Image (cartoon, rainbow, N blue to C red; front, top):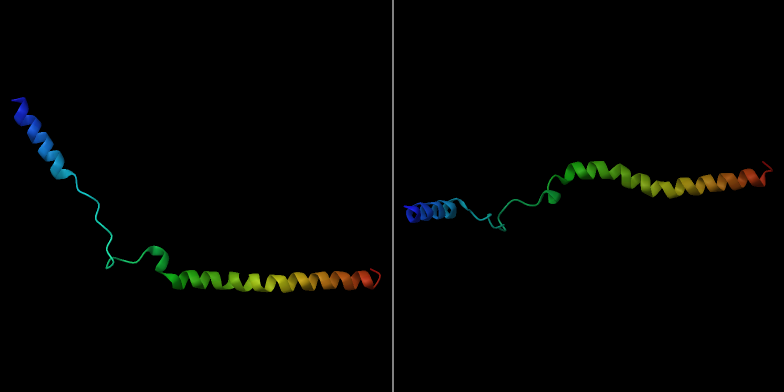
Length: 72
């Protein structure tokens, strides 16, 4: 009685265990490659601000030096 029950449990356990599907080249692209339009739209002003930041800091330094030179 125990042997058939044991075999039944082992068989059911083996049938329910399924391996994870293998990734295929035809599958969907990873998320980091999708929806780049939104990411680019968000990143564009940030990149522009980073480029301008050095100019603004240089201008502030020049203005401070001009004020110091004028006796302020």
